[in-house]
Image (cartoon, rainbow, N blue to C red; front, side, top):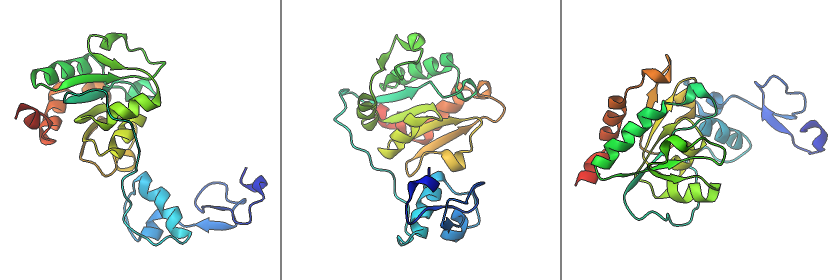
Length: 213
């Protein structure tokens, strides 16, 4: 598509496997940013803009806009779904965290997409609708708890503290950007992550402390 576009300037990263369509070849992000480390995907994408002439600067949090959340109480959004089974923390453990949140006066609200099997989570409030509805609910949450997936990044864009589970993905590259967060890494499988580990992560984020006060 790039080759057939007819554009005068065709830019792309030089380390990609196919670079023939590009007449502007962008170095690696590490070279552009002057760092010797793994970079977050936000930095990677921003580095291309810097290479094309925008002054190098701190990469800010993404900006999203949403209508006011319809949920007035202090609540947590739990997202128990992901693009692949190996990326999903067990449903019964999400439910256990939800029961714990209730004890601390934090309302659990489960978030699901239109095609997700949400039946196990029906005892609690459920948002299963459009992206507009999901953004609205995520924007007002006290905390996000969920698998590595799109809603985790939407929550981060609203500055919502987050606890995010990672199994096959690298959180250094794909973790929440520019928001308080706890990344729970489980290279040996999501079954190895205990509920107590998540409660400890919530305590470090001071979510439960603020709710109790």
